[in-house]
Length: 160
Image (tube, rainbow, N blue to C red; front, top):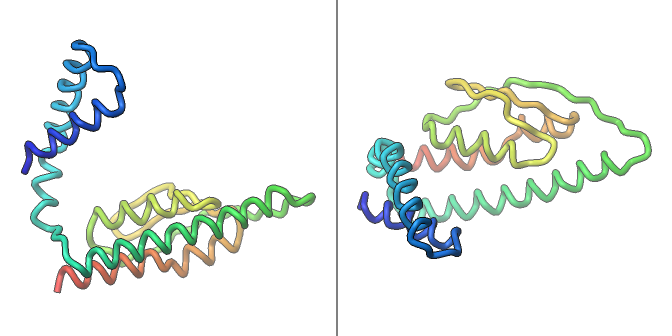
C-alpha cells in the first residue's frame, strides 16, 4: 500500500511536468521519495483510522456540497461589500470552541473556513480556532458552523 502511494506521487509529478526528459524524471523521483519519507508516518497513522464506507462517502458528499454552497454565499456577500459605494466593514477577530477530536478534521475545518471568503483562520489550538471575520454576518456564519457539525457527526459515527 505504501509503495502504491509513492507510485501515485511519481505519476502526479509526471503529469504536472509535461516534459519527459531523463533529468526531469530523476528529479521527480527524488522529490517524490523525499515527500514520501516525510509523509510515511502520517500515512501509517491515518491508514488504520479511516475506512471507506457508504456513510463516510455520504458525509464527504454532504460536506463538499455545503462547503461549495457556503463559498458561493460568501462570494456574493463579499462582492456586495466591495462593490457598494459606502464600504461598511466591521472586522473582528473571534475565538470559537470546536468539539472535534481528530486533528485531521480540525485542519479540514480550519482550511474550509479560510476558503470561505470573508473569513480567515489565524490560529488553531487544542479545542479553539481564532478566526478573522470581515463583518458581523461572517461572525454569525462561523458561530453557527454547519461544516463543523457534519465533521462532528462523521467523527461520532466512526468512533462509536
